[in-house]
Image 1 (cartoon, rainbow, N blue to C red):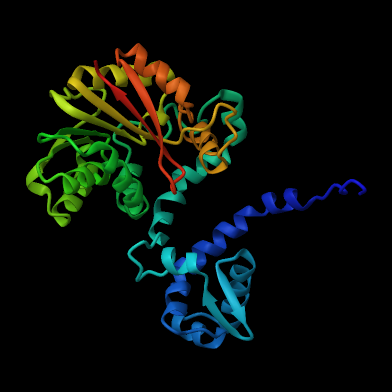
Image 2: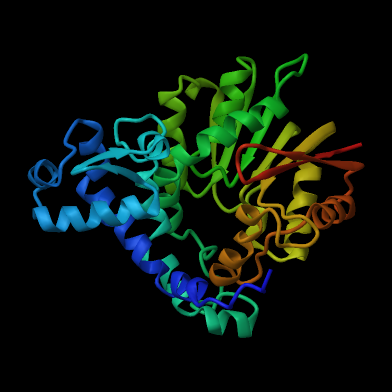
Length: 336
């Protein structure tokens, strides 16, 4: 067979990728997916429901059909299974609200300066990027990203549970608090201490109350670098936190976790952990670019790197646990 001719398709798909983003945002803002789920399936009916023009809705819905969010039969549109689960506002797994965080101007601005970030080796928008002191972006994260974190939180809780005595758990940089809350829900004897900025912990407290574990959910406001973590704990949760920092800082935090743990305790780290080649699996490995654009020293570290960090902090051993079907993985590090 003759070799495949070079194609500019990937170039144009990538250069125009912002159009996909804005089409999705427009559909979420118009509640297009929810209206289709409710039976408004033609452009005319959708235009009335969305308070938009029939032409505008038709063009947008056709584009979303091409992308794979919708199906089209004649003049009628239908949701794909994925869209029905994740983009129908009435679904418990609705993810449309995550756009509030994913598309915040602060994050988008970081990528507008990506060339400078590549030259610098870290974010070019400020000295610390998104991890600056008490950054309000994390309140938006806590509220908007909670639906996306429920599945990994339940899966992680399955790795943490099973103790023969009440667990004392510290949830570092707790954010929405769902990881610690999931542990408390699974183990009715567990007590969770959530550490984060006070304005972020207010969101975690709301979720703890809604999940019925507020009486076993204590708030520890402040910076993870400055606050006394207390203890001893049986488990220290480090979820979606270490990737924001360079290896020496990660090692410092691992040492704080080691000091806060009781003998035989565990540090449980949830992260985007690529294979040693750093390009697989794609959904995990691409996170390194997010850290390059938005943080001064963060990265997507391999298991071998985490293993070295926790060993240097005094941990006896570390285990790697995939967390399918999510794009994240878990490292469980044991204190001797």
